[in-house]
Length: 328
Image (tube, rainbow, N blue to C red; front, side, top):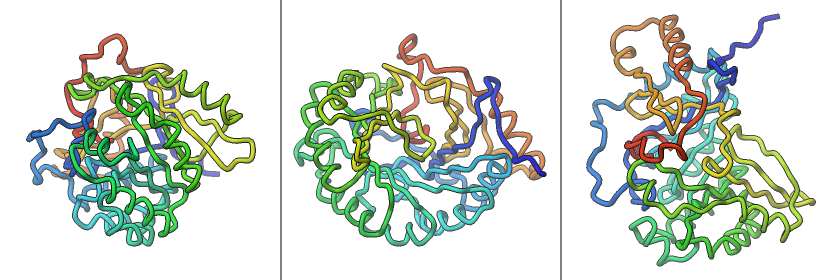
């Protein structure tokens, strides 16, 4: 019997999840992510084209990567994204193709994405107040976000996960409101702690999610649970299984020992950890005539660079790149 391929780093973690950024552009300017007036975008000529993306993802899949998430920036700003989704979902070895989005463009593309193999979506939604969304994102966009979410629901994406970056003194008073919204629509809710990535991340009003987790657990009688997806969230669920809430806590309770993912930026740079500088550049290799065998060796070399853990608490000023440049 043939043993399935696998990618294992120096710390015996199995890497099976690739987050693929298809653009570093975004139509929003979330205060914790990208500053208003930001001009440091990658040149489009430096973006991996669809053929290069497909070839590289296929190599990752041959080595055991099973889960693929399309991210950005805002991935739906990449022209012909549904076409790319179709090509990637058809690759041997890719078992799960998902999308992270701010949903402002989702109403236009939801049905196409579903037809082309995207099965799950994560949507950023930090408030249900129009004025507050404008304050956080720099845009008056709540109506478009909600229309996109409902279009995704109608298209049949399951599950739909709502991601809320919880910020002290900004939107923490809406936690119960977001819970009620997700209960009503049977969405999975995830709260995320802000990370000190770039100046915007360091200036965000960090909120420790451990007290939030305890309060919600007691209020709703939630129990420990698990959900498919391969990400870092720790979940609680209702006893009847109708509601699940996840907590992504890179600061208050990090999950480095079980990290199974790496991030590929739009220019072909692989980042092996959000909180460290280790990276590997694939674009020069892809455009320099590398063979498939050599490409697989390069991926193994890149994975060997993955550090044991981030140092967000010890060195909060270490990472100067913005989240949108790294890939969400």
